[in-house]
Image (cartoon, rainbow, N blue to C red):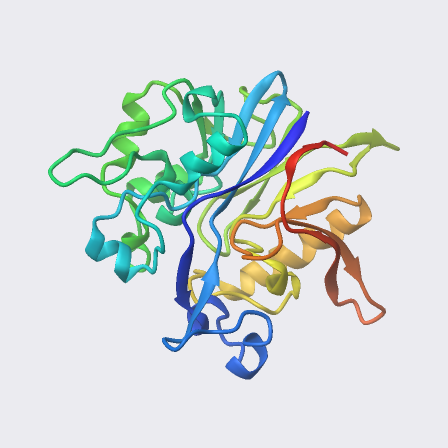
Length: 294
């Protein structure tokens, strides 16, 4: 199996919103803000070729579905569909994808499912040959969002996914499409049913070791590895901290690497923990280009 980091459209969002109650004096050392107090963010997908015999894309980024006014509001930096260009640069097209794994259905993670915005045109679903994997609780949240995050969902996307007849609602640790090659962990602190995909490594002493976890919005990038750091967008910061603490302890014990979707500079890193119990990273990698799974 080989892995590629696939960049989608980038964003700039308010640094205070991205770092919750952390003071600017702290977070600006991690991600310097521009004159509008916005920090740069990636929308990075992960492409795995040969995973259970399939070509699998983990998330799709924000894409280019927004009309120009909304694109500006949410700080999307490019008008073209960058994800499609990145797939092409890796030697693939969206028609080649067999499975798309969606951690949740917020627009900055699922918007890339849609064709670029064209005035007067109805939204069009890309990836015509792919199965779409979504957790049960994420699906229910998208169907009936809370007023706090209703604006984070794309109107009509659930209808398009359902009409495709290629939607798998995932419950439990494994999916039908990927079998026991990918194990799912769940978190409710950011949004109900956030589905974190772990590409499993070799089993040793009854535990899968040396795998890779797509961290989604539980840990958007390196700064959020520090357990107390959360986002203002999280629905329940205290719950998220507890979930993150428990998951990182498990991943560290099994030497599972972390894959970041929103970090502008780091795609993947190994996990560390110091004598005070503070988590950090090492062996940071900015890009994967057909890397053999380790």
